[in-house]
Picture 1 (cartoon, rainbow, N blue to C red):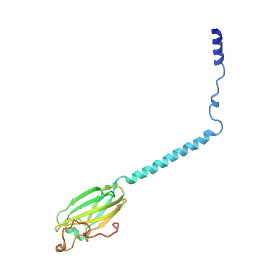
Picture 2: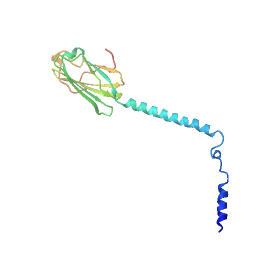
Picture 3: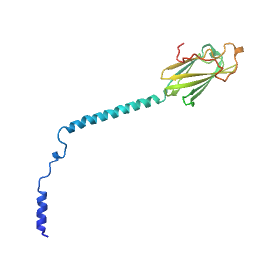
Picture 4: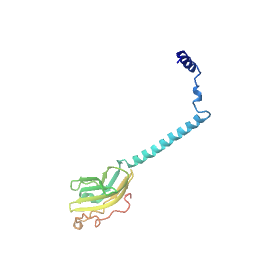
Length: 180
C-alpha cells in the first residue's frame, strides 16, 4: 500500500469545496408558512389555557354573602345553626351562632368561603320555647342571598313548639333571592 497515494487522496477530498449550508434549508416560502402556523398553535394553547383557568376560577371558593332576616322574631332567637349542604349531600360548611336573650340582630349576616353553585341550606332557629328547622335551596353566585325567617318562629310563645323535622317546619318563600 502506497502511503503517499492515501495521503494525496485524503488531501484531495478535504480540498473539495464544502456543500453550502443554504442548500440544507428548505427552498421557497416554507419558513413563512411555518411562522403563521407556529403563531396559530401558540394562540390555540393560550385560548385553551384561558378557558381552563376560567373553569378553575369558577369552581374556586370565594366569599359569598348570606343574610338571614329575622325581623321581629329576633327578640326571641337565642341561637342559629346553619349548614350548607353541597349537591353531593355532604355538609361543606357548618356554623353555630349564639345570642344573649333578646339580643339577636334583626338581620344576621354570614360570609362563608364557598364555590359558586347550588346548596341546600339547613337552618335551625333556637328560641326560648324550642327549636324550629327549615331547609331552603339557594344558588350562590357571588351576590347577596337573603332568606326571610320572620314567619318561622311563632309570634306567640304559647303557639311555639320544638320541631327538628324540616318537612313540618314553616317554609320560606320559594325564591331565596327575594328582596324585603
